[in-house]
Amino acid sequence: MSEVSELAIDLIRRRSVTPEDAGCLPVIGARLARLGFHIEHLRYGEVDNFWATHGANNTPGAGPLLVFLGHTDVVPSGPEDAWQSPPFEPTMRDGRLYGRGAADMKGAVAAMVVALERFVIAHPDHPGRVGLLLTSDEEGPTNLDGVRRVAGYLREIGERISWCVVGEPSAKAKLGDLIRVGRRGSLSGTLTVRGIQGHVAYPEKALNPIHAFAPALSGLAAERWDDGNADFPPTSFQVSNLNAGTGATNVIPGALTALINFRYSTASTEADLRRRTEAILSQHGLDYTLEWNLSGEPFLTPAGGRLREVVVAVCRDLCGMEPEQSTGGGTSDGRFVAPLGAEVVELGPVNATIHKVDECVEMAELDRLPDLYQAVCERMLLH
Image (cartoon, rainbow, N blue to C red; front, side, top):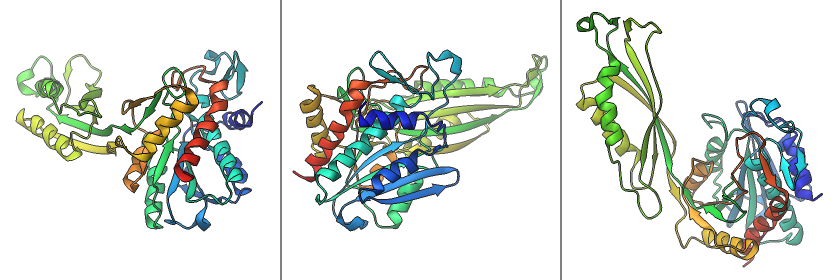
């Protein structure tokens, strides 16, 4: 069994459902501390975060810094009896490692640790610095005390990340067939439309907020928010939840609540989306309140960025394929690191089984992943 699979198995066994770390970070910290990494355990609220650096006397801001970014938390397993083998008892079958977090993303975390160990052992006096940033709160609904909070701490101590490789499962069918070079922003809103409750037989004495909202919803859904650009598809608007009513069939509800979301490109701004949404609602004369929540702004590592070029070359040389360079998918913690000035690229395992029953990763690809991460280290810092 390879050293990366051994570590991945150890991590998968730990029931680290968000925001629990379940002891993953101390295991990783002990390994890296033996090699001279400077380790900081940063706990905010119920969330455990981990920051480790090596090189340039571990001085914040001293020279270029290449960081690997990941998370030890996982989503719930769902009904455990639906799994072929228990989700937190890692099992190898048919050349795959099964278990919750195998692909998202304890396999990649193990590969990052092994790659950093190999790099530092081979190049103990390497130029620049390498780092590892991990959190136990990536899968949670708010991400308030995870990488978002650590990014604020890094700003306070004068740390600057030059390049960041995120280990999120990016591949479609084979390791290296797709990398993510950016992500769309995510802007959510909780909309409350107020009406007047009443009897359905006397609509003239009530105001139905469902009826009032319907034309505005049609306008929001029909709006073309932007045309996207060369790097991003057009911005999308979606209603994810719509709730109204008392449960009775003869009562007009007094209020309606809708949860809305924009996944938006660099062709739009948060402020413009908010302004245009509120303008449409106001045009329809609604009595409403709208509370906004910005989960993350869009980011892009442009073509010609050194990290993007190196990762493409590593996939080509070690995986034998030209990777698709995408900005699709949801969000990742890269959105909190990019504002620190970092080029951000996501490179990780196949994402076909993430969050599913019988989540798994190909053993051969897991064994190869540290080679890719180590190659990125060497090409970014040694060449």
